[in-house]
Length: 466
Image 1 (cartoon, rainbow, N blue to C red):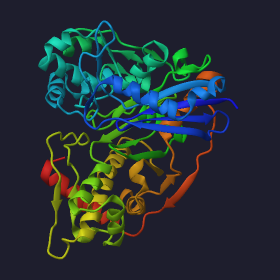
Image 2 (image 1 turned 90 degrees about the vertical axis):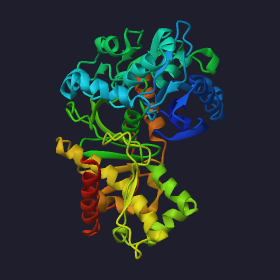
Image 3 (image 1 turned 180 degrees about the vertical axis):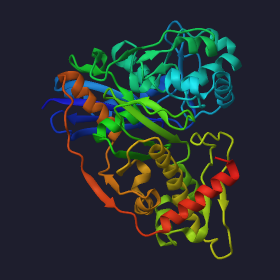
């Protein structure tokens, strides 16, 4: 059996899959946890990869492994010195300390100029804003920076000894244009003060090199890799008209398009995908952890929260949650807080609080779907993935809140699976077609979803003006 290895280095963990190259069937899997937080020593990612790699038995497969590919969390700033050692902990996508720098960038050039240059408008998630923060707040560390890479680029280096990236991940930096497929060094010069070395940007089917012997393989090639959302799109075999809603640490809403989506408001990030096309995407900081916080407040576990939400009134008897517990990226409200609205003696029950937390997450995601449709992205159905999609109350309510049919693919590590699919592409020159299996399907149920949406939109506009 010829197999490939797909890696997903996410915020929370590193997952490694060995996958049958012909069918896409997972033949071995393992994972290793990453520490919580918004900053991390990149060497921890390397250690977690080793642990998950060995746990999946990859060295024992040896010559059976034809190729490997890595998908990873986007945006993280990995700033390295001349010896390729970090000058500081890597700042992750969910680190918002650079919010003021992002605002300064928007004020300096204007949203239209940013979209023209890189098809995104800076928010605190993007790498360039983190570099600006480093230069402003830790100038001694910034002075030592010789090279800047992303989390997946760092792991590519560990596997091959070469720093490489791809256009999907590079398009989340704030200094790469997915429209022209080129870096914009003038932006680094302007906001970081100079232009450090950057990784080569590879095409989606390219080989990044040969995996080093220390990893226990025999001449396996490394694919270009991808950002995590582009990896998930590849793993799902995403088609035009399909909108992916991924509910994990963050919430993401994305689709695939042959043309770039231009949004001067900055809400839609005009990223590249992992096939050579484009990946219009919106990201929310507050997703599955909103339900976890509600469970903690009620002093119950997540399965109990899910059960409570299923017994509540579909519209939570008017109880409404704006779920901005950690600030928010879309809409761009880094200083926002959550709001529980519409309280009455009748609706102040554990069941309605549980239901409101589920509906708050779904409404935030529905805002993103509506924004996609406003910009001409076709929306015929939603594919619901991620850990949050395991919630029965959430998946049953999603179609009514979104106003669209919802399909729940069989649970899988789609980011790692997409990396594995890309690995086959790198090894053979052909992108394989693997079957997508659907676990459950839902249609909108009655008019309560539209009622909840209307209340949510009104509350958001009243409190935040957006």
